[in-house]
Length: 374
Ligand SMILES: NC(=O)c1ccc[n+]([C@@H]2O[C@H](COP(=O)([O-])OP(=O)(O)OC[C@H]3O[C@@H](n4cnc5c(N)ncnc54)[C@H](O)[C@@H]3O)[C@@H](O)[C@H]2O)c1
Image (cartoon, rainbow, N blue to C red; front, side, top):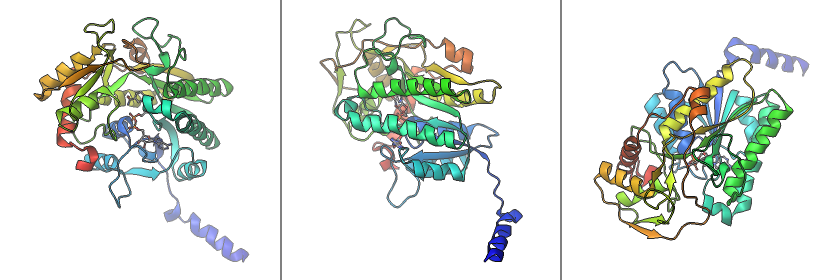
């Protein structure tokens, strides 16, 4: 018996059985909208020799029947010629997460996985807190168990609540008067991350506060693919343009803005993805640790009607719209102070409003039914 065990042990030590693991970046929610564009950006960089591991429970990502990998991941593999390790895993499942960490030499985590519909979160607060907070704590616990302390987190400008002043800088108070469980979940996660960073100097956390991600990959092959009626403006406009929805509803035209409609800081998803690539570079700086919140926006706000006009110009399609009442919890205007992202990440958004509309239109017109069309 002992002999058998010994020979089995020697067998596993033969050179051909020694697996040299490359450092991996674990991307939770990497099959979703922002996650898939970030995975593409990581793999498109020249001379990248990094392994990308995606964990996603496919609650908001499309996989064709009988396929192992979701459509977005398969397309990125085709575009880049690189393999992406994919695991159909829920981040609340600690055992399944541990198995992923055992298989790969995870160097850092980019954490996108979350539920994100503001309105739905009011109807289903428990589901949102479980996915966004319990899931996040489970992930941190497994990271710590495997000695992984570097994290980029998907936060949101929602954490600022109603702006006291504009542009919104990272020093603006957070957590005040937050209307939705979604917004609160992002704020609570930031507070949790601040606490873990205070408790142990090994943690390095960059919380990227996104403004309004729009657009699609320049190839027109990956993009935003919301299930049902979209919650956000740009996919709504795109679905109207492609004839899948009759008209756009504009929520409120009596705000104190340029034309009465809400103003937001829209940022191209490829710029956003590049911001993540820049962020993980900070982890290699000696002495970089602690909690850092950084805005990712352009610093310029556009109104709903300005967006409609820009999209009409680029697509040549008329976007019929109807003005309806304000939506509860919506604010008049927000846009980012982007000076910290320039200083700290050496990053700034380079794509224009025209690029945002043209890339959305390319994706939507090539794929009128999203990934189901591919
Ligand atoms: N898109 C936006 O407007 C926006 C703005 C600010 C912040 N964010 C944040 O950015 C992140 C990504 O957003 P997105 O627009 O790409 O959303 P998305 O829904 O397209 O992507 C999220 C992905 O996470 C997966 N997921 C959800 N719950 C999971 C769980 N429990 N376990 C494993 N996977 C799970 C989904 O299947 C999906 O593929 C989210 O954290 C979101 O809150 C998004």
